[in-house]
Length: 221
Image (cartoon, rainbow, N blue to C red; front, side, top):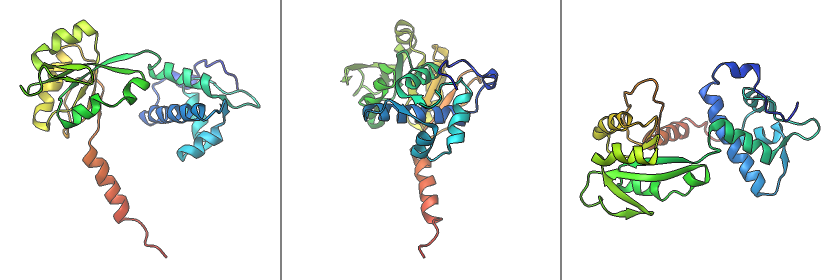
């Protein structure tokens, strides 16, 4: 293996979503290793920390290039840089949040976004009680200001944190105003053009998966 990072033959076709998802997990673990003072790691160590095989780690990374060194493994800082470039987080992305209720305010206060390359630049709502107020340094604007603000701030990623009945209308407004991708916290499935990727985060569904796992656990012997 070499540390060149040249694209492999597998990179000629889009990698599966599961691979991209694990790439983000590898990035987090590498950042943890760096904070703990580790300069290098191996596919075995990464796999063990994430519950996958070392072969899976190597296969996932091979979609994007060859990053290891014989007798060394992976240089953590170098691999962090490479993965950020692959994910597009080697630059800062301005983000807009629509919906500044309890969830929206929590998202505005989440500092992990900035650490990973996302900077909340605008927030929108329709409630008179919130419009004009400042949360985490962001002044809440009315939804009518979405087109102008997104254009001025060159925002292409939107986060929806509104009630389910309003989510589709908000999504349509974001897309028509230039948003290219959406993170949806509303408990509905959005219908949008195929060119606009949407990631849904339904916390109730995640809890249902946990409750299923609990009730189906094998009894203690």
